[in-house]
Image (spheres, rainbow, N blue to C red):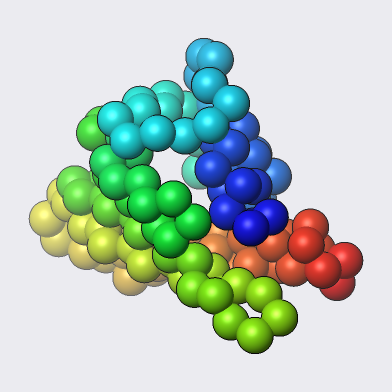
Length: 137
């Protein structure tokens, strides 16, 4: 399954992240993901502001799904499941993200006016890039 192979290659995350997020993987990555893998990167959500983020690939079910969980970073809670559902003529990729901004009322406000919109932008971009990469659209 071409889509699974693409997503199972951690360095391809660069291809799926909007340039404006200024996403940088820190350190070397193995050619294929595995359960227990730690990925370190940084993002710059605002000019001059860099945030370090560490995630762990906690579950890998070959060809079906994988889950990454934040171990350190900007969120109080982050769990992202990537599921691959076979369909006639291809596969549908489903992202399910559970997150909590934290920071009490300030975090609640940030989520309402910025974080939620930023995440929708990132996942909309990802959907468009997947279509471009695999279907040339």
